[in-house]
Length: 152
Image (cartoon, rainbow, N blue to C red; front, side, top):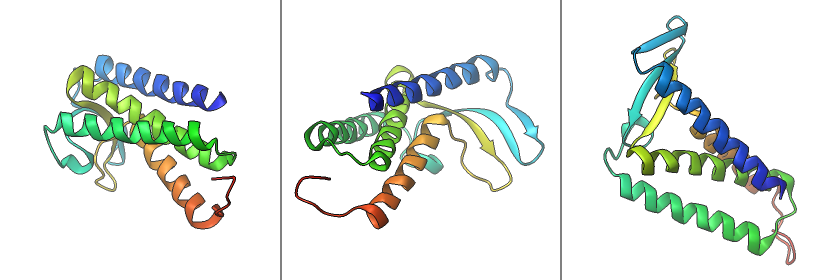
């Protein structure tokens, strides 16, 4: 049950920060927090990372729903006891739902974190959770996972 609370908090945090970005940044092209390093920039992202697959809303919606259902099925069916695995899956699921809400509601995802120093694509809270969750899941699968009959 705690995992669903974590997922809900991630979704809430993501949607709240996107609301702030949409209402506070809409009139500004960019707000530098650290000049030439980190800015807040309002972006309507109709694609994926690095702007690939622009205007493919239904592709992203379908793929996201499939991934979400697979994660939920795995959690319910396998009931994994490993906390690292559950945290990583919760982060991925929460971030995926946060961006899915935007895609369905607006046909784009609101992005606003802009690291100019490394010329990285503008991103959001949901993206951050998906990336960190994926890194943790990779770590778990590479270094912690041991195949057992009764545990995933």
